[in-house]
Amino acid sequence: SIQQHRQKAYEAAAATTPDLDALQQSMDGFASLSKNCPMTPLLWMQYAQDTKALMEGLWMMEKSATDDNAQQQQLVIQAKKEAYESSAGILELALIEFPGCALLHLYNLENLIAYICECGDIGSSNKVSNAFLKAWQSVGKGTHVNEGFIVSDMFRLFASFLLLRLSLVAKQQPSQSALIMDEICSLFDQWSR
Image (cartoon, rainbow, N blue to C red; front, side):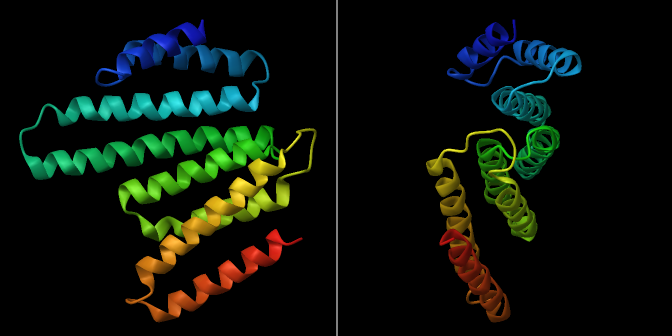
């Protein structure tokens, strides 16, 4: 079963890295399941997490084959980018199936922000803003019960991200600071409704 493969994969992760064979079996199970029946938002989130871990693990195998530190750092960043992009693709499919699910939107925002922070790709911050706007427009539509604390966490996460962006660009790009401040004001205006 998918759960047994996931458990085996992540038990090994406590020591070093996830068991890639067990993750691959889990991925195969998710792929088969998604073809034959609708998956719940939590299953989509697990599928995205396993994809990310598998992709990163495969890239890290290549990293261990080289002795050059600079090349290893490059491979680590490449691994994270590929892993997050694969995970993002799965989350996009999940959001098409469950556009009103706040938990999926929150997980997607967390993934995008983690990608930007871990890979240093602050240029992708528009993706976070677009994802938040899409979430804001979609949450509450559909059949999902969206707990208030999840929606509130979505706002808090986005506000924290905007403050991080502001602190990074405040001194170098004053014109960007004004745009970010406008975005923060807009966020609080939306939050108050």
